[in-house]
Every structure is written in C-alpha cells, then in structure tokens.
Length: 331
Image 1 (cartoon, rainbow, N blue to C red):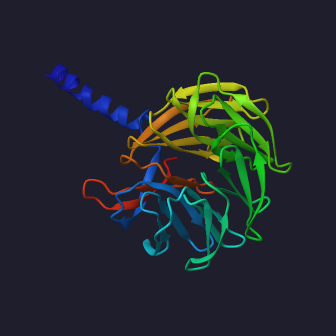
Image 2: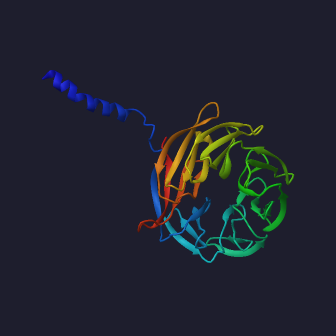
Image 3: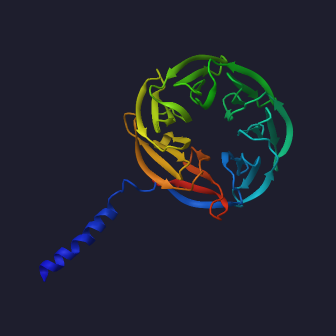
C-alpha cells in the first residue's frame, strides 16, 4: 500500500515541478485589455500614438479609413473615411500633426483634437510607409522608384529627397545617429543613407536572405534586425560594419518587428496569427523565447518603449468585431 501511494504521487509531483519551472513556451506578453473597433473586415496596416492626448490612430488600408481611439475612454471617438489607398502614417508631436501617405501620390495632413484636415503635400506616385524623426522634426517615406522623401513637419512642406541606387522598401531610422536603413526591394542588400547629408552612403549585403518585410534597430546592442520572407527568418547585423552576426527561424508571414532594447526583447507579428518573441543575450544574439496566439492577419502593432506596452490591431474575424489588444511584458 505504501508503495502504491508513493508511485501515484509521482505525476502530481512532476506536474507541480513543471508549474514551478519557467516554461519555454510561456506567453511573452500579458493581455491587459482591449478596445473594440466594430466591423473592420479589411486589413489594418499601421498604428501610431498621440501620447499627449492619449489617442491611438489605427489605419485600415483596404477601406481607406482612419480610426481615432481615446485610450482613457477605451472607445473610438472619430473616424475619417475616403482616404485613397493609404500606405502608412506618422505623427509629428511638436506640431500635433498626423501625416498619411495615399495612393494618389499625396500626403494627407491632419491636426488638432479632434483631427481636422490641413493642406496636403503632393509628392508623386508609389508612396511607402512613413516615419517621424524627432531629432529634426521631419517625416521620411519612400516614393517613386529610387527616392526617399523628406517632409518638413514644422513648415508642413516637402523639403528634400535622398536619391538612392535601389528601390526602397521597409526602413528604420537610427535614433542615436543620423543613418536611415532601407531594404532594397528585389535585392539582397540594405541601403544606408545619411539623414544629415541627405545622401546614400553605402549598402550592406544580406547573404542568402531576401524579401525583407520589416526592419528594427536595437541600438543598445548595436544591431539592425531584419525579418525576411525568403527564407523565413530574422537576421541581425552589426551596426558598425554591417556584418551578419546571426539568424533565427521565424514565421512565413512576417508583419512588424518591434524592438524593446531596454528589456532585451524583440517581437515579430505574424500574419498566421501569432506574435513571436525573441530574447537578446549578453553577446548581442537573439533566441526565440516564446509565442503568443493572436488572430490571422493581425500584424499592425506599436510598442511604447518606456513601458514596453504593445498595441496590436486585430481585424474582424468569424463574427467577432475588430479590436485593439493591449499587452504588457510578461516579466
């Protein structure tokens, strides 16, 4: 009888030990809330934050619609429709302006609370995503075949262009320096430009990796991280010389890379319906640390560096309304 009781206690002991041990598959983020957006069947492609007024902007590209979400009230307070095939957006906080690239070759401009239209900026066909540079109050975006446009957010005008030797795709702006890193579409390289000198300064080869979906900078570790589709992986490059330092398998439908440098964490949203998490080690390499189930097509996201909070735009699916899911770091 004693032996039988001892044996029967082993599964319980093992389960208890597993509970106490950290799981390799533990969720890397904790869901702390959500905000319903209503019926949004199309893809949501960009999310940005108005920290001062606690507003979240969510862009639904397929319907040409912008949602303005009041974070304090946890609800949508404004929608802007009839945007012509929007390509991305960026917010200039000093002037309280929101810039939205459109398929008709113009950048639509809005400002204030609530948002009201201002004079737009005509650029030309084939606009890309937008990013704001706080160091010089400018907005950058790819446009045309081989150009990188610079908008002056202070005076709300097209200021200059950086001419490139390739077609720019996904890009990232260095905060601790003046470089812009741009994937060369259809090529296995990353183009480098100097934002002070307004010119391309070189390029880095990416080896066997092609079709970059997203770029992120972990400047604390001296790394440029790129999510590739072919093959499906993330790879990281030394910011000093561009050398390939390592890689890790990743999802086949990469969305957006989010680098949380202060916590040594990296997140990749995936069109399959997951967020893959990677952890940086002391040598500046990354290993997968977990995965979180989300929803198919949920790739547009925003990370708030100070808190590590992540906002994920989730489209409508299976009769469920679209929503913004809010996550905090698990540890």
